[in-house]
Image (cartoon, rainbow, N blue to C red):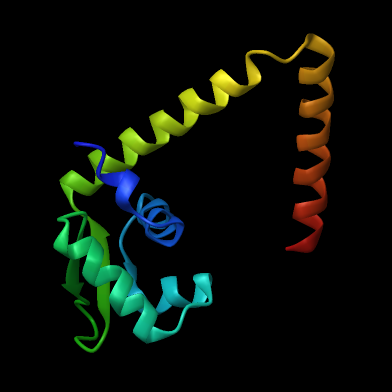
Amino acid sequence: MGGVTGNLSRLHLTIMGMLGEGSSPMSEIGMRLIAPKSQMTHLVDHLVSLGIVDRQPDVKDRRVINIALSDYGRAALREHRELVKKNIMNKISSLTKEDLKALSNALVTLKDIGAKLE
């Protein structure tokens, strides 16, 4: 990969993460990110130029442009997720058992509250 994800913004990485679930119309990703069409075009153009995503016309409506991770993009996303996982493991390795228990409880609470907000 050559560390390609190190040169991407959080929005680029968020788009890649969303596309890890499958292709999606640019407009839908823009709505989820609350990003205007012009910003989405710029973000996707950059990902296309790096070979991370491909634009695909929608089969049912040619006005709709779907974007999908390329094979290279899927590999870059896997690499990025692995780096994040290693970084988190490294950070929490110094925590005590009590700290880990408190962190686990806090994450459960946060998840439960988040579910109520949906």
